[in-house]
Length: 518
Image (tube, rainbow, N blue to C red):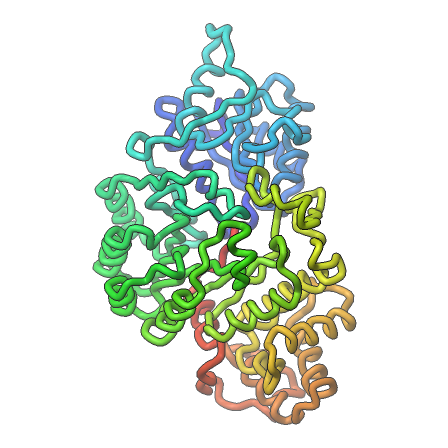
């Protein structure tokens, strides 16, 4: 890419490992303008003034910023600085965060144009107009884009660099839209499921594999909606399997016919990761938010996936849904844990701009934080203090369980306890009482807290606890075993006890698979 570009697309990703999928789509569809365009990617650690300096160094005429819930504060600062230093440049905004409640947001006043919706075609047309000096008629400030015909747009996959392929998550998609109406989700606004042309799609995937791509994160909302197409996708990748290949799909949990299960079972170990969103096990709450919930079928299918396949299951629950209290949420957590997904992601409900769930706010006392990411603070059924406890629970569950470091030690927290949720909440509250923080807890310090809790609070045999922690420390060929654990060290090849929700988590980390919830 040239050091000087008329059009510069700017992406602020949540972290370096992510790639800007939407920005690459815009760049791929610029047609003749592509040669005078470039893409700059940053993560959230960059200082606004540094980002602006790098952007202006390209001497742009048009700057496009992607606005998302995770970057809107930083993007707003950057937009303000850009228009202060270079008021002549044309600033174009797009993305889900600015596509709804557009005029109410601070960043809107800095924009020359905002594209709401899918912008692949609208952005190209807008840039052509802005760069045409003879054109005296400009588009309106807010441009509402209709869903694009997927057969008409260019795919962005050749814009993944060699560095992207080697070190970053590659996002891909086979379809857009979702047939369901779950009110917490933006996909509920687009009920028409559209599919990309297969020949074009598979050709692009073939090229990525030939270039060395191994990890594919599919962003489709409904991977297994079309079973025949799902089977084609898996057959395609199975025939081209390479060591380390991993496919991540979002899966509808109550749609798993035998034919699909057999195809999943036939894939190599570690090749599949399914993101299965449960969100709630409370039927009344699910009905209220229009979330399909066939509990018996969901439980049957998840048990079959665990028993008959090697797929890694990442499953989600959302705290703060309208009408769900802490007891109901706890029961749902225990019910999900009993199904043994390798990873449980506990999310706190966020108020996504435009999402229909906002219609419940007044009736159910749903109060959200006024700043991004707009997490819920309290409801009529969960107090602010309880929501804080749930937020800490989620953080400490990630540190204790989801990160795969304490595979043998973590189950001791809920050993012989009736409720996994209740037992872990006790550990979470105790740990917070010792640290007054949920961040920046070094591994050794965390391990020492865990030992203290299990021995002094849960009254477990000290030898048993230290042996478990020592075994966990040795995993992954670690060579920094603390001196106080060395007398309790055993072979690092110990078989992990079966029946826990942690059994394949570490293998997933070692093969560099993906953990992602944007």
